[in-house]
Length: 463
Image (cartoon, rainbow, N blue to C red; front, side, top):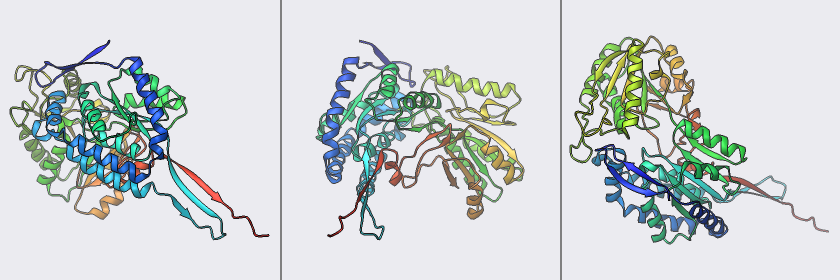
């Protein structure tokens, strides 16, 4: 039996050791899912909703334990590690929305014929979850597909694998029929075989660009639908007519929060030439005020990044930028000598950057903020679009109407004004280009996990 270790970035110790599922266990789970699919889709929408509300409440009962596990497994400060509100509120909202979104629609053609449209489940869905928001992200990968009548096999990232124990326990406690939801620790090879298998009908993946491309290749070859929410190199443009200090403080939070380990973290900052120097001064002050520390003892603003390997990759990208002419405006990094491991990376601010540098092209996924001076709206939009990614893009401006017009020119799945790092639960969430395919959240969460079915009935003419 192959085992894997969860190495805590907090202190470098083995936090947990777990066995991967055997091939026989994967087969058993898949067969159970196939058997459960007919029963589950036959339930009414309201019946599925009632069972899923119980699932949400049962998982909520693990709130305190999960928060501590999140801190130890991926390093987020304990005071910020409770993601359960996003699961409970978001999940219940999705159920309520689903009860309306999944209802049959009647269309009147005015000719006496009956026309109906229904949303039908695909069948067995494989959902693959990342480690960076290991509880809240579960909502999008579990609730809409189940509510729509699919059954779900669920794989979590090995780094945060303990979450699946609480999910499985909650599914049992809520009385979900056997096979409707099963979470397994699977190897990369096992999940790849499932993606390519004809027995999996749809795949949902949230994670890295590299992983998304692998899913795309395997699922596309098997001629099946997939939803991909991938990474980003999300830009912010700060126009001159803003409250500089407020913008700097909030953008710093968007860049450094969760140690920069969010798909929509701020990773490129473009500032109007007229306010550039004042903005940099305010932003560096915000970076300097961001406290790094032990996530369970120091009550810091940020803890370590997910691993020492990730930390060294971040530092390597920064050093490459510096060797190419970038300027170190603030060095909040802390070496291994300051903490138990070298996974603790403090906020780093870079200036004198350009798009020839990896730091402006490739996802960093760490607390690094490169700042670039621009002379006009046109230059800012051109540079913001000069990326293979397109998840979110933000504009800070007192002229909201003008900012929204600029937003129409941005190549991104979401455009936000005077905000950043902000998925709104009512709006569709997802990216374009290398940031993914498909959307989640709100009413739009049901688009990707269902397929339309049409009904047409023409009455026989009376003799």
